[in-house]
Image 1 (cartoon, rainbow, N blue to C red):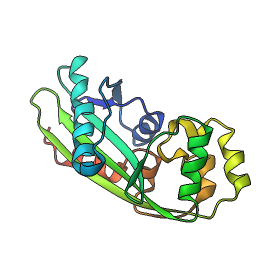
Image 2: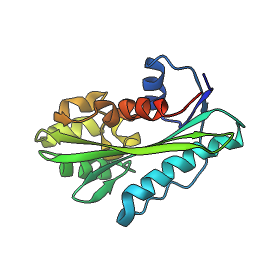
Image 3: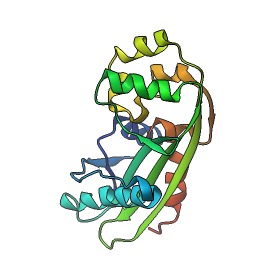
Image 4: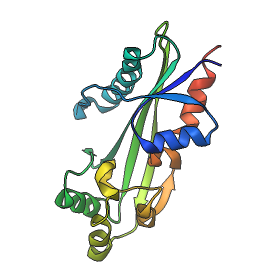
Length: 187
């Protein structure tokens, strides 16, 4: 089996890949994470591939995994909130509505550049949140390093009324997509 490299500093991606039983090295990519909202899907795929390719700074071979995830509602990308005011606004926007979590995943063989990539989209419906729900949640650390200001695997799970698609995608790593892309590589 080829060496796997996770080009991400996300603890959720690290945990999910470990739970699958894979052994891997970690590389923290050092790239600009700009997305073009007018050309989102191609931009997201390109960013995931750049993250995977960035592992070449540290590794000359192996299969590098790059991933980028966004939360979308009304055509707007919700990133990580910079403060309590932004977290509050995001959660109010998501309250009682369905949004999408979209991840681009890219696997790149570092020695020859062979790559496979694709997108995973999951619909997430929130229950209607009270002001107290939101205020109680934003005093903790959880919303501030998550796109959309919530963690599906943490306390934010109580906000979710329904998930249509891959729950692991919402947590931060589209496992089924990863396994499908991985199966396309020949040892």
